[in-house]
Amino acid sequence: MSVQERKQRERADRERLIVATARELAEQQGWDAVTTRRLAERIEYSQPVLYSHFRGKREIIGAVALEGAAEMAVAMRVATAAADTPRERVAALAHAYLDFADRNPAVYDALFQLDGGLAYAQEDTPEQLKDAFAALVETLGEVAGDGVHPELFTEVFWASLHGIATLTRSRRLLPEDAEKRLELLVDRLAVF
Amino acid sequence: MSVQERKQRERADRERLIVATARELAEQQGWDAVTTRRLAERIEYSQPVLYSHFRGKREIIGAVALEGAAEMAVAMRVATAAADTPRERVAALAHAYLDFADRNPAVYDALFQLDGGLAYAQEDTPEQLKDAFAALVETLGEVAGDGVHPELFTEVFWASLHGIATLTRSRRLLPEDAEKRLELLVDRLAVF
DNA sequence: CTCGGATGTCTAGCAGTGCTAGGCTCGAGT
DNA sequence: ACTCGAGCCTAGCACTGCTAGACATCCGAG
Image (cartoon, rainbow over all chains, first blue to last red; front, side, top):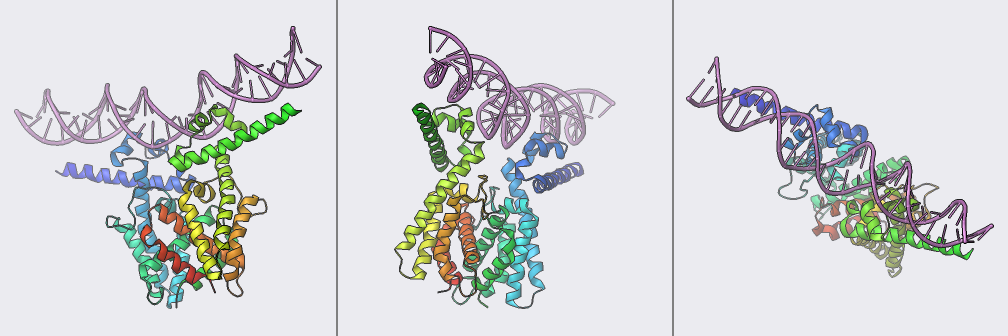
């Protein structure tokens, strides 16, 4: 019995190692560099071992995304907790969001650009994703304005942040005016 | 002399054929399906011919993007021309933008998601891209509000539309409330 | 304490990718 | 009429995600 438990524990450890290594490799050299061969080599197992944990590369991306969603939710809640006024909270949230995207581009891609095989905005959406969205609603709901659904407002605000994040990173928007753009967005969208 | 001219013309024709075929294939089956082999087969030449026109797949994506940018600029100008008030113009522009993204997902990806090797927001940015942005500024500049740079405002509005377009297409936002989101965005961001 | 069998892992390979070296063919210019 | 170069193709490289099948290792029953 305890032998089986040990094996299960070791398996779970290895799975965590795979996800952590994939994430590390993706952050270092981009997701294109995360090949099954390279990943297998880094964890010091052969490729088929990856497939005994995940159906394929897509599921590995999905696992990194879930890990990232949880971290992002924490980061956003920490950032908003210190702020006193609704306005400061929204600004802090927006900054925290873009900051996370900037510091963890590979994780951000796994979450919002790549296909990790995850369901979004549905009943069977993983808890981590629901909770990350909930973290947004907590701060944005109070500035949605009269007669506007908090969730709908949050979606619009989130989409705007997402657009800024992705266009800036792909150098389609110059990073210089980032701060001004963010100010404008917060001032116009939110109702204080 | 006329022989050389004919050859140049034929070369240009073939180049257009390559771009059109790549675009068609991408719209039909997605950019992943646009492989050099399949593309070569469709134009009834061997793969190396592609490389006598373009440095690689990236440049082909770039060519499709430029073609798309020109079309998008036209579509946005046509949509806004018919509207009388600033408010109607902005709404028409936003609809035209999302409509284009929806109807030409592969072209939209070439423009704003994939790497086509193009420079954005710089001096050496291709004319087609500058003009597409100019088309946005033409309508959005007049609703930027006092003391707000028209270009900066346009960037923010564009980024928001981009976020909505990409998140909706990747099913991270449900398409049901698309219209409501757009209304909210227009009402809040623009100053009439 | 031995041994059968399941569990776990690896090697080798498939079909596909972007891209290129080298040779062949055919037609243009002398 | 002949040469020679432009233009094109075949074949191949190193890589991708993924998998079949062989092999070893270790667990539990007798």
